[in-house]
Length: 409
Image 1: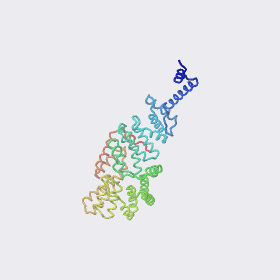
Image 2: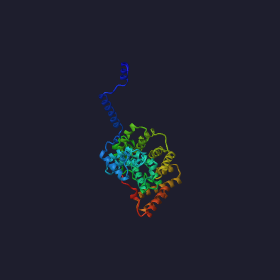
Image 3: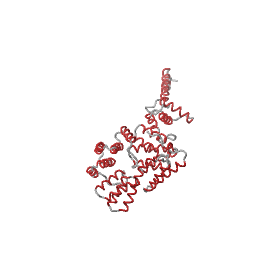
Image 4: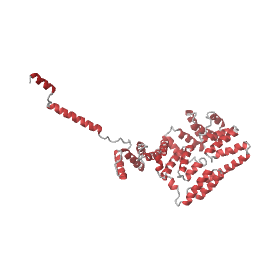
């Protein structure tokens, strides 16, 4: 072989030196280590309030319950339940929030428990959304009657504290359809304006909800309405005027303002507010429609007043204010026979107002007596429901009060 061929061969196939070989090995090791770091399972991100020790405790609890190792979301759901048992509401809310609604095992229960915890935290709007999400799930029907009745009561409590009787009615109708309504549910469904809604508990919880969510208009309006009901009319009016400045067309504020002015006998301001009202809509609040009726009577537009009051009774048949308005309007229209019938219903409603507070889950006689009064007032569905409660009490050795009345916050 010539020297030229030897040189060419050395150029094409160089022999690696010792240092080159060591460098190559180190380079390959670096790639392997880097790949391991990138591809190895990372520890799950935990809610800020959840410690690693609490997370581990939840994992152990899951194994005890189900006999298999948990996924990350399983552990968070159990951690939330443990936090509830310890009344650590913030941690519970944080854990449940991380569990998606479509989770196969814990999705529905996470939404329900999250909603209840959010009520504890005074986050009324967030709680309501979580309750609505739970009830919208087909899976909610798999829960037992006690759980569903309890969930309905928690949601109704949130809506009641805000005086949102129209929204509450939908859920009360639903628990009656499910066959899990108790006496209180039927009272709230059939007599929303005969019951004393201006309760110390309602005012207290409304103000607590408002402190946690000061920009919530529903809560601000409810707080002002509580002031009106307490007779603190100037304070109520001041609060509503401030709201009106920021939201001049909001129907909730307009209705509450008219109610306050009505109690103040301030017809001049009521007429000013009347000019800001939108056209009548059957879907508007019962209070706003009733106030339209009061204004129509003030203007001696008796036919229009009658129409408004009758519209209220379509949604709230036991509304005594509207029933009295009907009596007066019929009299002014010269419809004596109809007025006589309307006056009889008004008298029956007055008796119901007195009797309804006496009805409990333990007294079938009182429930039957209330059903008789409901029949006299033409409240047929209410009469049927209270007859059913009476039969249940007579036939069941254990009354339903404890079954259907969970602890409310």
